Length: 462
Image 1 (cartoon, rainbow, N blue to C red):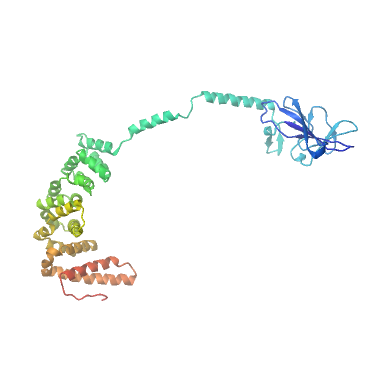
Image 2 (cartoon, rainbow, N blue to C red):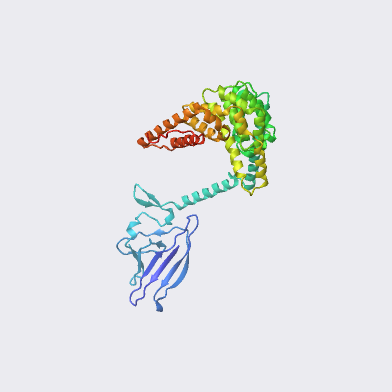
């Protein structure tokens, strides 16, 4: 706390201002400050300060000034902003209110630090707090803090956290550990069909990753998958084929170990439609970009098995899958052959070209009667089925061209489809809808008609 007395120069009159400059931060401590006398009578206008130490118990008797000058007694203090003067006639100090003082003070106050004032909302006035009560409250706060410091901390140290994380890491399973656990459960005699079905579904999700599929193969997991395909439970057969197809897809390491003969045997036997669909998926994934498997597929009578499956399928779902698989194999070999025309080749590509040269797919397609089987898919009412049949017919023209020319049913189907899709294009244009899909089918029909040199009348715009 600082009290400042200001003397303003003058021969006949001097005045003393007592100003409260600094408040103590806590009532739990005694006020330690000084009275500062500022004398402005000296020359040069510079303020000269003289500090006088005041020792007290932290509480002053505050005089509540009013508009009239009143005498200050020794030991009394006045609020900040009050006007104080020294009466030269009586030698006593006098005080009266300042301009802003009425906003903050009432006659019931004793001077205490500003931080101890509490504002009473209902009275719209300031009330004082007993310093002793504040001291007791501060002491209680210190005691509570000491008890909290001595109590066990709610926060753990960094070393403890690291130890806990290490323990958590032991509980986290990697994909390898998960697959090992799943295979053990699948091979357990206590596992039910429902549990094995759930295991296959989890494995199918995992083996989409190439590394996981290779790890599963190294664990001997393919043998368990093939056992599932031989199960009497149709659901296990279906999901086992799905896992196998996902594992071998674009994964040569797994493809070389897959059992082609098991897939062909499953297709050749009486099986539900859903099982055959999944087995065809696995077979297509195994043959894609794998000429070694394609060659063994042909040598093991794969085309004969597919032809029987094609003839027995009345709905067209299996037919479409079979034709799509054959078209992919033909196109794949054709792309490799065209890339082989480049004089600059790497040894790996030259080896693949040699392997594909050993796959006599188109010749065997002609021998197995596929030149007359594929056109049957054009009779379907599904646009997607027709499109896939047209693409396969175009891919097979190098070996089937003579049969196409002599196949009146095929030529009639092409002419009827050309007329039908031309009308669809016209109607779609009138309605302002997209016609690119139907236009693409018409282009396929035109390309096939040109290849077989069939003389027809184009019905564009009619």
